[in-house]
Image (cartoon, rainbow, N blue to C red; front, top):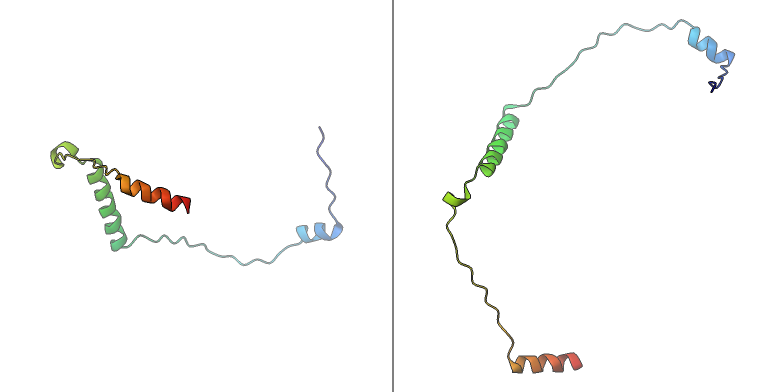
Length: 87
């Protein structure tokens, strides 16, 4: 498999090979550290997550009894619903 040939125009060649007058620039890296408030907020969130992970269910929660109460409709209510559906 051969590579495709690329033709470059004379104008582009002259632009590439011409000497450019560039200025020297010193780069400065700026690193911004988080503020004290941001650090404290992140720490409090981490503490909260740790407390959630380490939560002891058996010693902290009391047992509860739940009752499921199902109210069945009476005959009168069922008749009223049937009549309402017929209309």
